[in-house]
Structure formats: structure tokens, C-alpha cells
Image 1 (spheres, rainbow, N blue to C red):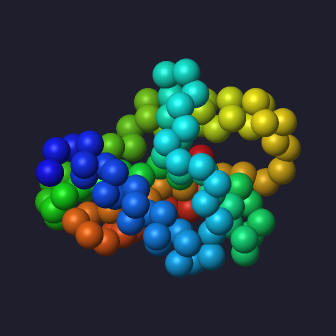
Image 2 (image 1 turned 60 degrees about the vertical axis):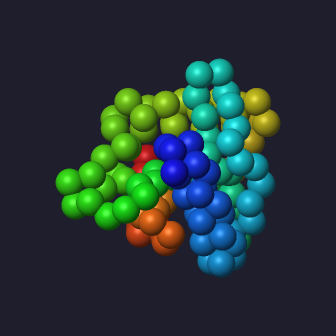
Length: 115
């Protein structure tokens, strides 16, 4: 699988995982200028809009875990994209940024509130 296929597979697994924990999925792969949001979802329990970044690896490698892809630069881009989306949609309610890490065919970790 090439890296694009791996990423799409990881995002599909993340969407299934989020639905399984009662999140509503609003949008996927939103481009905002040079930035992108992988998934916009709604946490029905905490009543919070969630911007989700998905990082995927095709196999487990302790030296190359998905979280390594969340560099400070990537986190700044995520915040910038979230702020832009909220401004464009006049959204003014609770929100957060989550990270979902996928390895192979399962969600390895879900980090809530990465901000």
C-alpha cells in the first residue's frame, strides 16, 4: 500500500471508531488554504465539536509510532485550520482538537484535547 492508501485506510478506521463511541461525523478531508482537517466530528457526550487529526502506520514499529507525525509545526497548522473553519462558519461553542493514531487495522490510541 502506498502512503495515500495507508492514510485513507487509517481515516476510515478512525471514522468507524468515532462512530462506535457515539460521535457524529460532519465532514472529512476539509482543505482550508494550505491546511487540512482530516475529520470534523461532534462528541455527543461532551457536546463538543472535535477537529480530528489521524496519523497512520501500516505496521507497528516502536521507532516510528504515528505520534511522531504530530510535530509542533503540524499542531500549529491544525489550530490555524480549526480557527479558520470556526470563523468561516461563525462557530462559537465548545471545541477541541483530538489525535487518533492507527497502526495496521486498528486504532492504537485516541488523544483528546491536544491543544
